[in-house]
Length: 333
Image (cartoon, rainbow, N blue to C red; front, side, top):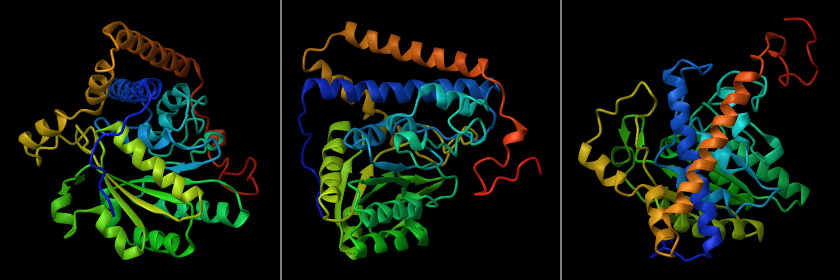
């Protein structure tokens, strides 16, 4: 059980790459909300991770090409951080055939196995056993793969979370369980959901290494994830990574989060991961011109992705049963 004491240092190139990843997710989700308000998405169910970007970016930055991730209903950031294409994300959310799932999955069911993304899941905790199964498969095959499973604090109250973590601990599977503790499971605060707030302390019950880390500092997240992934790859078993973060907006677009105290919200917004990383870069001598260039590049990428999505045909009813059955149903519906 441990809690990192200070922000680690990395080379300037790594810090720039991390900042670019944070901005890319932030601006993408801001654009997604605009599209939602304009009724240009295929579904009104849309959960953004604004405020939590450092978790996805910090963890995925240390994964190897052959590794896997599983994600949550709040999964746009994981998809992009793992290497999913911006164009595939936007097209999917807009219900187009050029989407990651050819327009059939929308916001909560993103999948791109080509980059090791085994899928988002609308069921709270539903993807944790999928990640555990993937880690078991890798171990049985003797493959040097590590699985990172992202889930929220609410999922730690689900029975399947305990079953999966316990099994992974017993079998010493190559998996990192990443608890994105954004302090709220919809309207239930973390303080009322558990008698033991420390994820690192909870890990002791499973015989696992547990780490509590500042989820607003992408360097701290990356350092903790690097150690956890290294342990998993070396055969030392799983890690339970408790990442303290915060969703700046409501649970979904329909949630004004009136149950939260404004002082709490302001305190967390003051620790915006994008601003923290910008300040770290500025301290190394990076000037405003570089930040402006990043903003332009990201804006252009998003605009091009939306334009490409709009040029793609809508999802087809002919593919309703595609990829569902081992033996295709053909034209029967």
